[in-house]
Length: 413
Image (tube, rainbow, N blue to C red; front, side, top):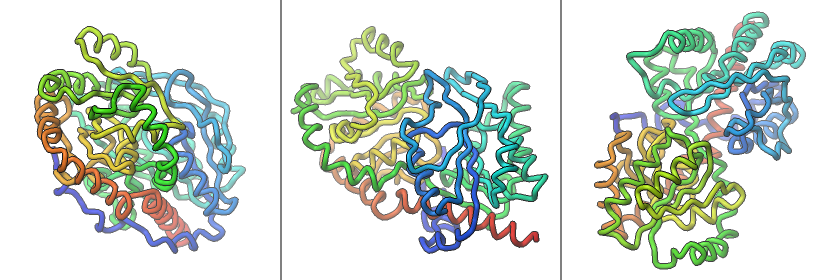
């Protein structure tokens, strides 16, 4: 496992763009192509709509009912166009992957005539064929917005090799590369993409909105503490969707091992998903008194305020920054790459090996044994959000990538 210290720091090139880059967006017309506009990404799209002053439009597919690939209920403030969608439902390692096919995307791009396209890489593969076609026909540059290759596999099936081959074809023809983490930058380097076309917007929630709402939920958090009988308890918290890839059973097993030593500790899972029923059954069979609080979107802050330590045993990402904004220390494994930027090993949390329950148990034991250290680590989490990685640094890097693509467009004239 590569440690956070071995990766580029927040001060490395292209890690942040000055806020006045927004002024360079004058007269730039941008199209976003995205699978669906999930609620957690809407704040970014609202800001782009505002910054570009009516010269931004998001083209996206329809909902995949029963999955997390659904459009936000509230898309006010976002200039968007939902396209007719053929839904391709796939499964990978037990997780649902919804692939939208929007046959009219090329037509809409030709009609809108953007100067730059911001394209969701990877999972929007089929629609990105039309993005590439539009780019080839018109010379319009596109920004490839991607996680990178977080989990390289030496042995993959023929269909997956074909999928990756098509994705690489699209990716290599992008003008600019925008990654969610330092791991993405390292991937761009391995692929040989020019450094002056690489940008990193460390994945995070709308931290401004989170920080503003925290005070409003303190009373509710106090009531929830009484409701769940947590007034004299410490809480190991997970917030997010429930899929097998989240590996929440690992946290249950660590908790069961430590429960005799720390009778004041409880585990709370906040979220929902297709794996919830199986997870609840697992906890019953193992005799684990885990609290299942259900999905909480509007009231999420009240539940974060219950936590003493945030634990992400498997895949994820956005919940890390949200937990940090609430002043929580963290334990994570391999999330979406942002963990290597957001978690400073031993300072505000720890990054562990995926699936190593013994290591997770040992690390929890060490942290629970020192409440003062746990508090200091939580304070450092909040400091990182305030000073290093937040929605404003995120947006500055997205804007910098768009401006760089526009510079390349102008240089080709």
